[in-house]
Image (cartoon, rainbow, N blue to C red; front, side, top):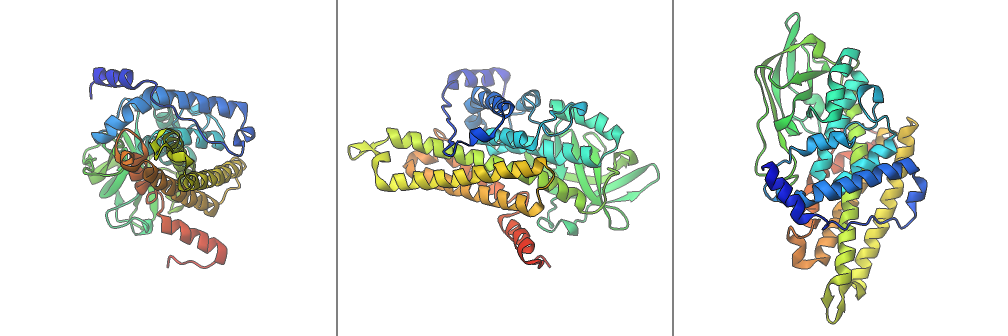
Length: 405
C-alpha cells in the first residue's frame, strides 16, 4: 500500500476510535503516574495511527510495514530492557500496559511488538555476548531492524525438544539446516533468533541474518487469523553462520522456554486489551441499538452478558497487575505466567463471542472490531503454548506429576 493511500485512510477514519477502557475496580489507583502517562501516549498513538488503518490491512491480509519504525519510536520494542542498549528501562507492569494498548487495536500488532521484545531482544540481552547486545539491540529497539524467533517446526510444536533443525561445526563457522514454521515477522525480518541442535544434540540459540546464503523466509498465506500480521517460515539450506552469532549464555531448552515466559506474560496483558475493546464496543452498541422501542441494553439478557464480561475483565485486570508486581521482583513462576496467559486468552475469546452475538449481524462486519478480535484470538489461544499445555503446566505445579511424558 502506498504512502498516499495510507495517508488517505488516516484522514478518512480519524476520530472514529472512541475507545474508553473499563476500570470497575479503580485499578488505575494501583498504577504510577509514569505508567498512566505511558499508557495514555500509546493509546493516543493507536487511535491516531493504527485504528484508522487496521481494518483495511486485515481485510487485505497485508502487514503494515510502516508501523515497525513507529513502534520503535514509541518505545514498544523491549521497553523492559536497559536503556544502555537503546531500550526503555521500564518495569514489567509498564511493558504489560503497552502490550495491552497495542492488542486493544489488534493482536497482530501486539504480536509484532512482543516477538521483537520478548523473543528476539530478550534472548540476545539475557544470553548474548556484549558484542551481540551492542550490535543488535539498538537497531531492534529503534525499529530499524525487525526480528523473529524460530522454535516451532513442521513436526514439533508443543514438543520443542524433538526439533530436527541442526548445525555442524566447520571451524570458524557452523552450517545450519532445517526449517521452522508459524513464525511471526519472518517474511520481513532482518534477523532471526533460531534454536537448533549441535552435533551432540544440545540446543543452542543462533542469530541468523537476512542475506546469509541459503536462508529464506517464505510467507504463510490463506490465514483467517492475524491477517494484519506477517507470518512465514524459516528455511535453512546449508546456511553458513559465524560462530560469533551463537548465543554463549545458555544451552538446552532453558533458553527458548525462558523467552516464552516473557512473551506469555505480555500476551496475558495483550489478550485482556482485546477483551476490553470488545466489551467497550458492546456497551456502546447496546446503548444505541433500538429494538422493540428501547435500547437493547435495557433488556435483561443483554445486561447479563455485559455484567459477566465486566466481571471477567476485572478479575483478569487484577491477575495481570499482581503478576506484573511479581515479575518486577523476579518472583513470578512459569506456572503463574501460564495461569494468566491461559485465563486471559480464554476470557477474551468468551467476551468476543458474547459481544459478537450482541451486535447481531453487524458483529461480523469490518464496521466493528469484534470479529477480527475473535479470529485473532483463535491464534493467540494456541501460540506460545496451547490452552491445554498451560493447563498441564499448572497441573504439574499442583501435583508434582509430569503429564507430558
